[in-house]
Image 1: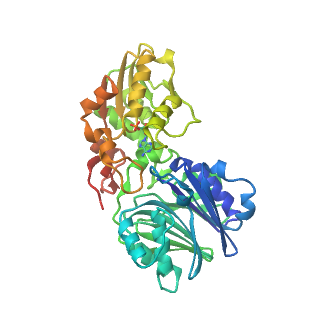
Image 2: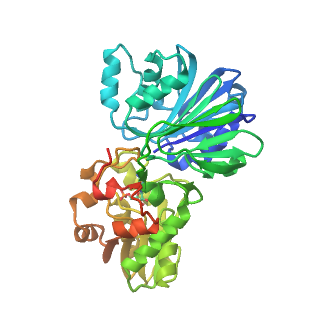
Image 3: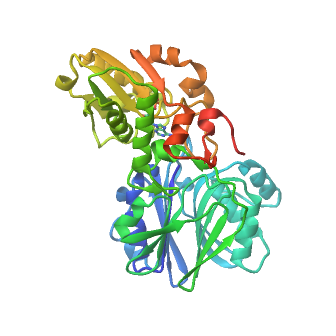
Amino acid sequence: MCSVVGIYKNQNAAKKVFYSLFAMQHRGQEAAGISSNENGKIHTIKDRGLVTEIFTEEHFNVLKGDMAIGHTRYSTAGDDSILDAQPVFAQYGLGEISIVHNGNLTNKNEVRHELIKRGAIFQTNMDTENIIHLIAKNQASTLQERIIDAVNAIEGAYSLIILSRTKMFAIRDRFGFRPLSIGKIKTGGYIIASETCAFELVGAEYIRDVNPGEMVIFENNEMKSIQLFEPTPKKCIFEYIYFARPDSDVFGKNVYETRVEMGKALAKELPIDADMVVPVPDSGVASALGYAKESGIPFELGIMRNHYVGRTFIEPTQEIRDLKVKMKLTPIKHKIAGKKLVVIDDSIVRGTTSKRIVRMLRDAGAAEVHMRIASPASIGACYYGVDTPDSEELIASRMSVEEICKYIEADSLAYLSIEGMLSSINDTKSEYCFACFDGKYPI
Ligand code: AMP
């Protein structure tokens, strides 16, 4: 998961990176960091925690200059060491560079093995460190050539931003798995960010996305482009379903609108007689609105969310996850008592949340609880940068829909079909990756 951002040629760039990371905090809450470039000297500050917990006013006395990059990190279990926080900074043959990366390299182990054979030593588990070694060990005379060679050696999902002493590079893998958009800042310069929700806070206008397989170079106050690879788009559909913020435009479409459409499709495919449509907050809100619009059943906020608790499975152990669901969601009892409910959530992963919600709603007196999921059943792990558990832990890879329904103790359960999902985003060219739903992995 993770978010990346770069600010090119705007005063107090690091502060703007800070605000951008704050807007994209949902993409990773474990660690964050900023590198800034002050007259060719790169300074980096990174730590574990939320963006607002890490950075204080004093840090910006160090993080000066008009170019900066930043990152928020969401790791999988066990990799929460500070060493694994980004940006990754290095001094190398041509000077200094700092890199931020959102994605997951599928040939990380092979590349690392090769580099170790050639004498490289690694300090972290991150695939990003592979990239920095590939650049450092290369003999080409310009950074641009070295970066091009490096991305030719890696495979998988990467939206990268690289800061050097004088330039900034933004690169997206040929599949375009993870988003990366460019905006023009009204007060001068550019922003490159994982999500366009960052643009609002820094006063920037969306220009375009970095294309799959493209390298965009920011140099001498200008933006140049090189198409490095033939694009073979397989954009991550889960960005629409869960991951991105609803006010962002991702892959050229507004996330909120796509979720509403998925809710409408769900109501068309799987109608049910009920008194009210209740979203699981916040992930099910937009699709529940779509479901209510299409079905004519009233929309009600029957469940409240405590916003001071992070996302439910942000910590890796099952014990903490269970407790977090309880801390996070509570029913509005008098709304629910005696009512037939259609409860909408975006997805079921392990089933913890749905089971807890059904029980909570029954305890609050609901007459019937019908779960409707605004995406197809999750059956496969993601190897391209979304933190989904291994297939065995995904409840739908082990159980049929009827068995899951029984397990979560709902009156009925149904998922949106793959066709319904694709029609909601008007995907006529098969430009999306949904391997987590159909098991067909592009690499
Ligand atoms: P679970 O309780 O394991 O079934 O998780 C389901 C909940 O987690 C749903 O409410 C989703 O909104 C949310 N969710 C789905 N995918 C992810 C993910 N990759 N990371 C964090 N939360 C997720």
